[in-house]
Image 1 (spheres, rainbow, N blue to C red):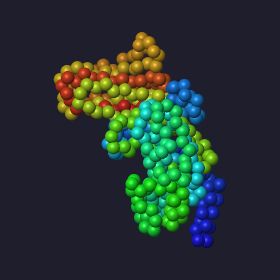
Image 2: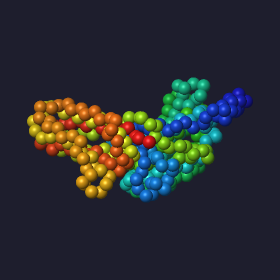
Image 3: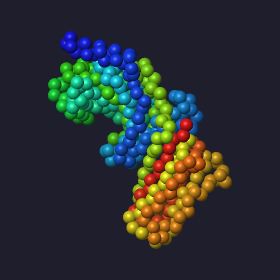
Image 4: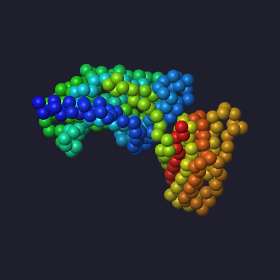
Length: 322
């Protein structure tokens, strides 16, 4: 016990000497997408510092998600007691934007676990519009999965829900540390999760700056076998880098178009970027880059009638601008 306390004190000292929470990193999997955004609605401009993490869960099949990862400098598990966050949801969904606490044995990185708040937990708001949540360490709404967790009195699996305080006081986990905290959206079995915007996050009384890292490229993917009608809508000033189109077989008719749907309400400002006949084509790539800068309310619409019924894959690549 004395050794454990000494180690915790050493880690607490290192936090004061260096850092505790790092810059958020956006990640996504499956049909999910994650990117930095400047929300354009009035209520979004009333929150945070101007940037938001746009988390799009997409069509849900159990493994589709988007998240904001916040690195943590090995905070002892018992020390974490406070979190607050606010987020804007495009639509009402079955789940809200929940917290995940990633923990490990800081002397043996083979031993780790993620402790997840149930997405549909009581009190976790999930209605269209502005939402906020204050983390309650005494509510049984946390479950975990992990590796090499021998010694815990808690049972792994989503069906086994505990309070965070139970993890803080567990025989095993109370000696571990936190290496990451994330806010996650998705992981449902069905439905479509439209965009949720993480606008504010505070951990242990410390506000986490939410801001894009300049120059980071983001890709958005879409596929289908019917008519194409896809939209790139970053909701932040952006530079269009590239559009990639792949067909499973040579097309025999019709043109592929990409059009700027300008944020100005009048269609007179809309601009045709591409009009390409796809006759004899299976792959088509257009590089844009410098000079192709757009405003936060501009969108890029790609369309193709696809009478042939070819299977297509479309990729937009873009960068957020300051």
